[in-house]
Length: 205
Image (cartoon, rainbow, N blue to C red):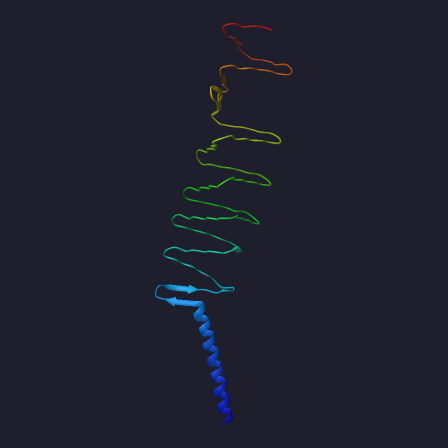
């Protein structure tokens, strides 16, 4: 009889333990026909030995009060419509190897202030059609060594009424109001054909 009472007591303790765990789970997990909500004041860990798949027919939101860390051996993000990524503070993307961003349509990067692109080696910008760099103010291109500009058909530089144009046939035209050639040493003009100077007056010294 005493053994039966001990067994009943142990069973009641297990039932009470399960009831306490169920109450804690109900406080953490809220299930209703409208949806499922998981809330905890501590940490939440989801671990799977295989795949984890999250599917939403409507919106999917991820919010973090502080840092968000994602570590993966490989990551692919695919969207059939638009995707928006907004950061109110700083954002850092670090990769030990390559980072690739591909889009079937337009990719727009719009910073509220400055945009800096830094590479410790080579920077390459490639376009299948036209490419434009537009600044409402100044554009500065600085090279510590060589600077090369190359074009297959024509190369034009224009500032107001002044223009320098180079064609692929070797024709170079310099147009402007007043043109000054000044050298601290010699200036040599050489042509296999004629050298023609035309003006209202041609003066020497």
